[in-house]
Length: 181
Image (spheres, rainbow, N blue to C red):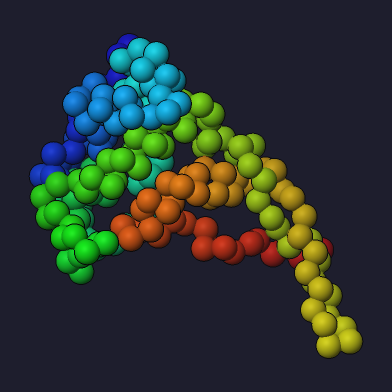
């Protein structure tokens, strides 16, 4: 069964599931410039559609976007936004569209997802606090790996988080779980 892609136009569509048309001019031009874009160019249209829809969902799930949805309670995706405080990187944030940087990050995330299931809980280990010791005026923290808990950094690559830093914040906030023993 083919994946149906409905691209957000900037209207705040209730049926949108993608920030980029996987077979549109933007995606094709972006992929052509990738050094390692053969995963994209060699994929079927359906595989590209799955990657774009998954990338869009992943970014929306992991980022708290600036501003307010253009059509709160109606639009299916995080973008378009209003009340974004006007400018990002010296340029106006477009009111009735998905910013180019968000589209670029969607393409990057799609390629990352085509290479590896980054949403899998076993995709990366997060750190949990194993023990805390206080004595002699020093605090000792002992962190242990917990592969059952996916770290945000294992889901969203750092270069994608950097691309979107002015458009929202990525979940996780550097916090670690504390467990009583």
